[in-house]
Image (tube, rainbow, N blue to C red; front, side, top):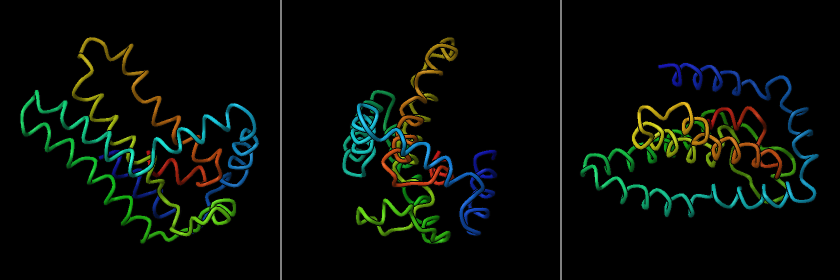
Length: 169
């Protein structure tokens, strides 16, 4: 319910254009694009691509088979739902990507970040199903890190505004 409320509010705000601070935070993030952080961001950007996440999702779905067919269907369904929601919201909001992304040939709408939504959906499942109940304090801090890293990478490579990334999360 909280997630639906947050994405609804962000969507309504994003329809109106950029959120306060979007351009400033994007400029700060893009300032990190040179050197090793930029190279890592490019790598993370590739990891969040649709093609890679189809493979990763199928691998997680195969691992879920040990918990039964229902678990496998839940994995596939949740990731598909995140992808579908992202695509629908992109069309509803129809917000342009940052100028750098347009120069790279990315012309589809930017809100929300599909890369970030995919990674987040899968990691939430992993956190909910595979993190032992007594280990949430230690593992629960580590599991969300890839979603944070991919979201930040999307800003560093200049393909999304910060609110696009938050919408994906």
